[in-house]
Length: 334
Image 1 (cartoon, rainbow, N blue to C red):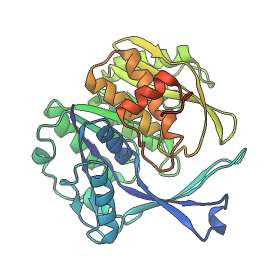
Image 2: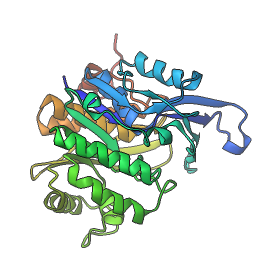
Image 3: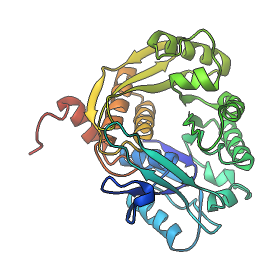
Image 4: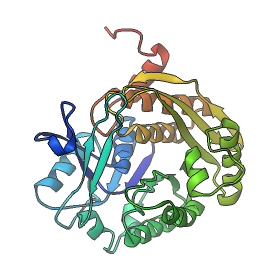
């Protein structure tokens, strides 16, 4: 298996319960996550050696983060004790036709102190095969963007495979700032998780329709490969019938060839982290060097299964994902 580093902020998610809205909630359910952490936990579940490089406070909340990661077999040796607080986001689950809502509380966090530090990249990237980052980190501020670009340059100089999930969050920054940052980031990237809307609204690709179109997505991948020299792209397309009834279809582009899955319909228990589960599933297949059709089918299955469990991270081993692909959840395991 491979050794992978993920860079990003660890977050506490506080979700309202029993169908209550945030303003009326007296009790919240806490989860530990963050886009890069979710990918780290999934890859560790699949047997990879995974390091999280981030900053957390030295008091009990930081210890809670480290305990969570250790419990999930993630290497915490490179986590730096700094600052005073773990970032938080409040989550109001949707129901039926009412969509979910997220409120961020991420100012003055340990991670924002962490990005200002001097970084021992030689140690962080020692004997590492892959680096995973996302567009959430540069959305935090200019110092976070500079930190990420430094990490990408150091990883690139060492021949480390770099994966990047666009993960645009409109509540953290606007499309213009994201586009400016992404165009600095993408030349370093080997594997890119970018959907149709990313090309349309962030990268400004012309000649594609406003509505999702598979042929246009393929064209976007071909153009982006030429522009940024990225040979691998992946994404999903989601159909939302209600907050509980949804569908996903997976798309994978490698070396000029386009691979897709069937549509998979499912009921949603917890949507948070579904995209991160997909990204981890794709990366797992790439690092194992399996066939592209197996890569995209595994990635989609991982994403679907994540929707069936509570929490930000996927909780399934490789064998469980393959078992679900084979049986499609029809049988009781006994």
